[in-house]
Length: 308
Image (cartoon, rainbow, N blue to C red):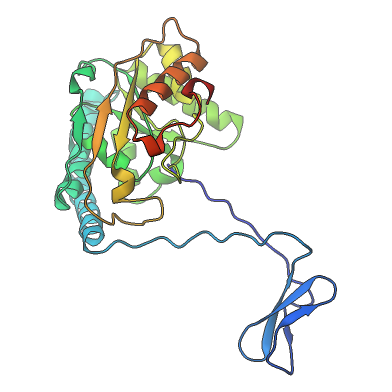
C-alpha cells in the first residue's frame, strides 16, 4: 500500500519580481532569479539548501494499461451489485467470515488480469494451508498488481489495507462489505483498533493478507518489515505463510498508473512458519529470509535477512 510526503515553501519579496531585461542570474542575499515568461521572473531562496525533489510523473500505460483499467472499473461496477443485494443475507448467515463476498471479489481480481492475458503461476501450491485454516500471508510488495495475484490463490482471505483505500467509492465499499481490515496510521488508539480488528479477523477463522513492508518498494528490493503481521500471528498462534511475488514490477512498476506490458508473474509459496517457539523478531526474520530466497538476484537483500 503507498504514502506521500508533502513539502512546502515560502514566498520572498512578494513571490515574483519584474525585470526590464530578459536575462537571468543570481542577486545578493541568496536569491536565485530565473527566467519565467519573458520579463516576469520568480524569486526562489536557495541559501545553500538542496532543491526540493519533485515526485516523478506517473507513466500512463499503453493499450495494455487501458484495457486493464477499463476492466477494473467495469468489473467493479458489475460486481458491487450482487454484493450489495446479498449483503444483508451474508451478514445474517455468515457475518464473521462473509465467504460469499470473498468468492465474488476473487473475480474482481482475476478478470482484469485475464483481460491483458496474464495469469500468475503459483509455485509449490502444496504449501498452501487447508481451506479451513486461518493463517497470515506475508509477501513482498513491488507493484499494485501484487494485490491482484491473490485472486488466483483459491482460498478465502481478508486484506489489511490503508483506510484511505476503503474510502474509495465502489472498490472501498466492496472491501468493507467483504470484511477487509482498515489500517489506521494515526494515533496510538487508532493503531490499537487496527490490531484488535486483525486479531478478531483471525480468531473468526479468516486468513489475513499483509504486505509487511507497508508500501511498494521503489527499487524492487524489500524495505524494512513492520511488526504488525508477526505480532498478530504470535498472539493468535496462526501460522505465517511467506509468498514471493516476481514479475509484477516489470509489468507495472511503481512509476506507472496502469500496467505497461504483459509479463510472466510467479508466486512462490513457502512452507508455513509456526510461531510457537519463535519471538516476533525471529518470526519476521524467518519470513523475510524465505521471501528473499525466491527473489531474482538483483532484488535480493544485500545483507543477511535476519539482520534487516
